[in-house]
Amino acid sequence: MAEVHIIGQITGATGFQVSGLFCKWSLQLGVGWRVVEGVTEGQTQVDCPVIDSEQTSWCHPVDIHLATRGIQGWPRIILQVFRQDDYGRVDLCSYGVIHVPTCPGTHKLTCHTWRPTGTFFEEVQRSLIGGGRQLLSTEYIHSGLDRYQLQTTPMGMVHLELGILLRNFEKHGISY
Image 1 (cartoon, helix red, strand yellow):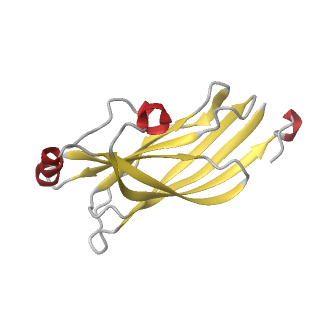
Image 2 (tube, helix red, strand yellow; image 1 turned 60 degrees about the horizontal axis):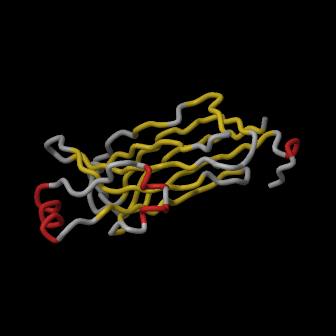
Image 3 (spheres, helix red, strand yellow; image 1 turned 135 degrees about the horizontal axis):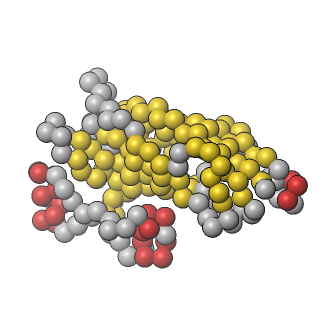
């Protein structure tokens, strides 16, 4: 079987205009993929920067070893950014998805995120007391089938640094 090693970190986020952010992430795989070792989902700590609220730092490690019989269903990382306020309430900030690079090496990646928008009243309520629209299923984050029907607004960016190691792909007739 061909193998993929993903080693790196979710470094942080920029452009969110709020502090107290944390990120939940999960790795989505196709049918022919198998996790050999590592954790395929996690959550960063909450970062409350005192000096610069534009820059959020997480440095959350990612270390996953995968095996596959083909390249169909190549891994992608699903991101959900949340905000924890001073009272401990948690609100969704944004969703994002980014494909794991297909070539070996070190990659600095930026995932642009978005959130669903509501009616004028819902948006005013969201800005004053929190809350807001959320997806009922995370399937809409990475599936383009029904996502085009959503009204969304762009949010900040999540930054990742991933090292990709590929093994035995040439034995299975896959060149990169």
